[in-house]
Amino acid sequence: MGYTLYKRVDKDFDGVVESTISALEDEGFGVLCDIDVQATLREKLDEDFRRYRILGACNPKLAHQGLTEELELGTLLPCNVVVYEADNGDTVVSAVDPGQLVGVANNPALDSIAQEVEERFKRVLDSL
Image (tube, rainbow, N blue to C red):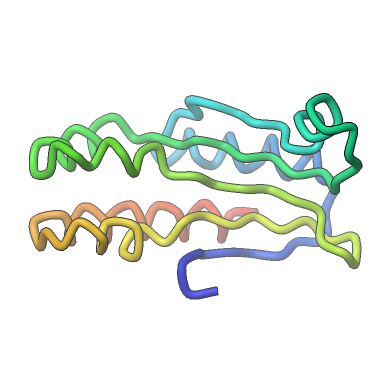
Protein backbone atom coordinates (compact mmCIF):
# COMPACT_ATOMS: atom_id res chain seq x y z
CA MET A 1 0.00 0.00 0.00
CA GLY A 2 1.84 3.06 -1.23
CA TYR A 3 -0.04 5.57 0.87
CA THR A 4 0.47 4.07 4.33
CA LEU A 5 3.11 3.03 6.81
CA TYR A 6 2.06 -0.09 8.64
CA LYS A 7 3.01 -2.82 11.04
CA ARG A 8 1.39 -6.18 11.71
CA VAL A 9 1.67 -7.46 15.29
CA ASP A 10 0.58 -10.64 17.01
CA LYS A 11 -0.87 -8.90 20.06
CA ASP A 12 -4.25 -8.20 21.67
CA PHE A 13 -6.29 -5.59 19.76
CA ASP A 14 -7.23 -3.46 22.77
CA GLY A 15 -3.66 -3.53 24.05
CA VAL A 16 -2.36 -2.43 20.65
CA VAL A 17 -4.83 0.47 20.58
CA GLU A 18 -3.62 1.60 24.03
CA SER A 19 0.04 1.14 23.06
CA THR A 20 -0.47 3.06 19.84
CA ILE A 21 -2.10 6.00 21.62
CA SER A 22 0.68 6.02 24.20
CA ALA A 23 3.39 5.88 21.52
CA LEU A 24 1.72 8.72 19.62
CA GLU A 25 1.69 10.79 22.79
CA ASP A 26 5.39 10.03 23.32
CA GLU A 27 6.02 11.49 19.85
CA GLY A 28 4.06 14.67 20.61
CA PHE A 29 0.74 13.71 19.01
CA GLY A 30 -2.62 14.04 20.64
CA VAL A 31 -5.50 11.84 19.54
CA LEU A 32 -8.22 14.32 18.66
CA CYS A 33 -10.78 11.71 17.67
CA ASP A 34 -11.20 7.98 18.14
CA ILE A 35 -13.75 6.41 15.82
CA ASP A 36 -14.88 2.87 16.57
CA VAL A 37 -15.86 1.79 13.06
CA GLN A 38 -17.19 -1.59 14.19
CA ALA A 39 -19.59 0.02 16.70
CA THR A 40 -20.62 2.74 14.25
CA LEU A 41 -21.48 0.29 11.47
CA ARG A 42 -23.39 -1.88 13.91
CA GLU A 43 -25.38 1.08 15.22
CA LYS A 44 -26.03 2.87 11.92
CA LEU A 45 -26.33 -0.03 9.47
CA ASP A 46 -26.87 -3.09 11.67
CA GLU A 47 -23.80 -4.58 9.96
CA ASP A 48 -21.05 -6.71 11.47
CA PHE A 49 -17.47 -5.60 10.82
CA ARG A 50 -14.06 -6.48 12.21
CA ARG A 51 -12.66 -4.43 15.10
CA TYR A 52 -11.39 -1.26 13.47
CA ARG A 53 -10.48 2.06 15.09
CA ILE A 54 -9.52 5.31 13.41
CA LEU A 55 -7.34 7.56 15.56
CA GLY A 56 -7.08 11.17 14.40
CA ALA A 57 -3.57 12.18 15.47
CA CYS A 58 -2.22 15.72 15.56
CA ASN A 59 1.09 17.18 16.65
CA PRO A 60 0.22 20.83 17.39
CA LYS A 61 3.69 22.23 16.67
CA LEU A 62 3.99 20.47 13.31
CA ALA A 63 0.37 21.26 12.41
CA HIS A 64 1.03 24.94 13.12
CA GLN A 65 4.13 24.90 10.92
CA GLY A 66 2.19 23.22 8.12
CA LEU A 67 -0.79 25.54 8.36
CA THR A 68 1.54 28.53 8.30
CA GLU A 69 2.97 27.30 4.99
CA GLU A 70 -0.32 26.10 3.49
CA LEU A 71 -3.57 27.37 4.98
CA GLU A 72 -5.69 24.76 3.17
CA LEU A 73 -3.62 21.96 4.79
CA GLY A 74 -6.32 21.75 7.43
CA THR A 75 -8.40 19.75 4.97
CA LEU A 76 -5.82 16.95 5.34
CA LEU A 77 -5.60 17.07 9.13
CA PRO A 78 -5.57 15.30 11.49
CA CYS A 79 -3.37 12.47 10.28
CA ASN A 80 -5.22 9.18 10.57
CA VAL A 81 -3.78 6.11 12.23
CA VAL A 82 -5.90 2.96 12.07
CA VAL A 83 -5.80 -0.16 14.19
CA TYR A 84 -7.69 -3.19 12.92
CA GLU A 85 -7.97 -6.94 13.17
CA ALA A 86 -6.50 -8.77 10.20
CA ASP A 87 -8.14 -11.91 8.81
CA ASN A 88 -5.51 -14.13 10.48
CA GLY A 89 -6.13 -12.61 13.92
CA ASP A 90 -3.10 -10.32 13.95
CA THR A 91 -3.56 -6.65 14.70
CA VAL A 92 -2.48 -4.12 12.08
CA VAL A 93 -1.51 -0.53 12.77
CA SER A 94 -1.47 1.67 9.71
CA ALA A 95 -0.68 5.38 9.45
CA VAL A 96 -1.14 7.65 6.50
CA ASP A 97 2.17 8.29 4.72
CA PRO A 98 2.62 12.02 5.37
CA GLY A 99 4.70 12.49 2.21
CA GLN A 100 1.90 11.10 0.09
CA LEU A 101 -0.68 13.11 2.02
CA VAL A 102 0.95 16.51 1.66
CA GLY A 103 2.08 15.70 -1.88
CA VAL A 104 -1.38 16.66 -3.08
CA ALA A 105 -0.69 20.24 -1.93
CA ASN A 106 2.31 20.48 -4.32
CA ASN A 107 4.10 22.81 -1.86
CA PRO A 108 7.80 22.01 -1.33
CA ALA A 109 7.75 23.98 1.94
CA LEU A 110 5.76 21.10 3.45
CA ASP A 111 8.34 18.42 2.59
CA SER A 112 10.45 18.80 5.73
CA ILE A 113 7.34 18.77 7.92
CA ALA A 114 6.08 15.61 6.24
CA GLN A 115 9.50 14.01 6.74
CA GLU A 116 9.38 14.85 10.45
CA VAL A 117 5.90 13.36 10.82
CA GLU A 118 6.99 10.24 8.92
CA GLU A 119 10.00 9.73 11.20
CA ARG A 120 7.77 10.05 14.26
CA PHE A 121 5.17 7.63 12.85
CA LYS A 122 7.93 5.11 12.08
CA ARG A 123 9.11 5.33 15.71
CA VAL A 124 5.52 4.76 16.86
CA LEU A 125 5.25 1.64 14.69
CA ASP A 126 8.70 0.40 15.76
CA SER A 127 7.65 0.64 19.41
CA LEU A 128 4.71 -1.75 19.00
